[in-house]
Amino acid sequence: MFNLNNISDLIKNAPASENEIRSLEDKMNIRLPVTYRSLLKNTNGFSIAGGVLIYGTEDLMERNETWEVNEYAKGFVAIGDDGGGNVFLMELNDEESKIFVLDCGDMNPQNATIIAVEFNSWVDSGCVSELEEGELDNPIETCSIVLTALPIGGLKDLVKIKNVLHIKISAFDLLKCSKTLPCELVNEYPYYQAIRQIESLGEIGQGLKVVSLKR
Image 1 (spheres, rainbow, N blue to C red):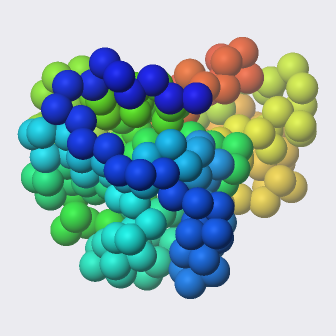
Image 2 (cartoon, rainbow, N blue to C red):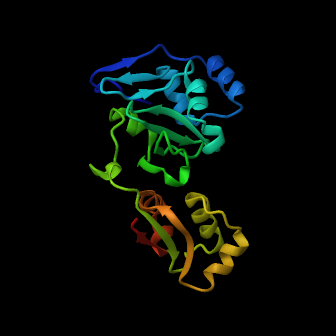
Image 3 (tube, rainbow, N blue to C red):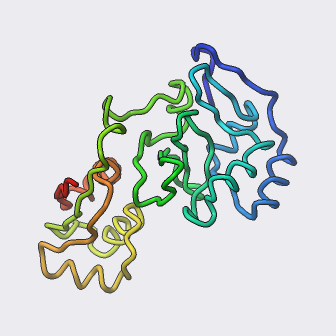
């Protein structure tokens, strides 16, 4: 459910129908995130004075083609922008509702920053970033993520870490790496994205260390 009543200068649209959403998904050959689909059934996109635009079914396909999302950020969908060159992305995964932001001139997801971890709350806030003020204006800070302790759940937890961090390594190699601690899992990873994704892991993430690599 969404509570949009407290968002000032909000311009809503009529709700999208299930048929409209499915037709769009068929044309784009994707399945939209569940939380975003729910929003479209509440309001088929919206805009907020100041520049924020959340795409509806009429412009989603065109905007994703403009930003060349399928080519440079496969596995993601652009669901809006801030009117100032920053594009909002979501993963094409029903279990995820994080919001990523990228400069429209660099659609590489590895350079994205998570600005919200829960789509509904982000929308209800008026699409306000959860980042500290000024983070997006600073040069992108990268890091390496190091496994310093084997999680209690063993391989099961390691696989969850792999999936949450989107690490391109096989489960076998990950288990092998965990036997020679400390073990670097990935480097040149967006720093703020790493912090938030590790926090989302809860206790499983306690054995992970972020090592800043300032540019």
